[in-house]
Image (cartoon, rainbow, N blue to C red; front, side, top):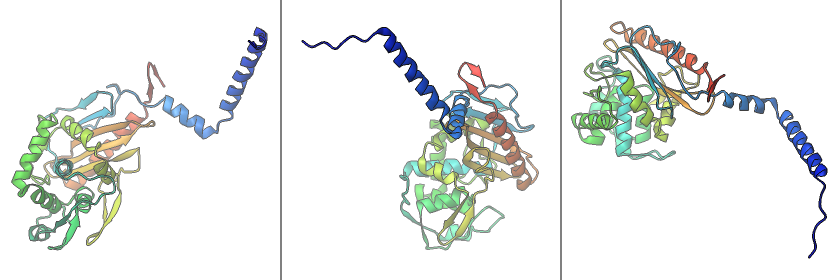
Length: 313
């Protein structure tokens, strides 16, 4: 049988050295942007700690890092009015009963006279709609979550459950199933101050909501054009800054300003947070401004503290 000639050990050592040199040369030759990306991923946030977090000076807050199992809270976690943060649960329940795949518009839903009449009534956040118009489920979810239309929240509740009262019972069951023990829903829009929750409870909802591709896509949209209504803007002005990709604002005089937010870290993980009860009992505008500013400070503070496993970057 033919046997290949043996190769001297010194020759293998030389070949190994050449291969190592080639690998090092290729690494140095990587574009700087690729090397910077790799370095950022090495320093990506992998945990959060309670030290030196720039919490809001009032109200309550909670934060979590996706997949970490950690939930850090600040302030008394007692139920407070949450205003239009309620609409995240409204959308969650609607999509649970009428799920949409990415790109789907869903069934067409007729605008009833009540939804049309409620537009502009009572100083609520609403959009003008025409009775008899048929809007898709996805279009109505845009109107629910971007301009935060209360009349659309109630329309979706009636369509889904037959009445708002029946829909609210579904909301409460969903909250129970998610372990939101300190949350009470009494309406689908959040206009009622008796709809209350805590920052920690809202994180439980945020975690599940961001797992729904359609909801995740809508809350990350700055502006959309809805046929029959026109362009509508998202009230979350932090979108596109500080890694923010959602979720929902809420403000009223008793609730103050609230923001349920989702932001990307330097890596691929998601930070979730809730800031509640900012400047309560002032004006909705003043409260919302305070909630947005407090949330931006909190998000930037967290994203500026990268960690790598076992060491600090």
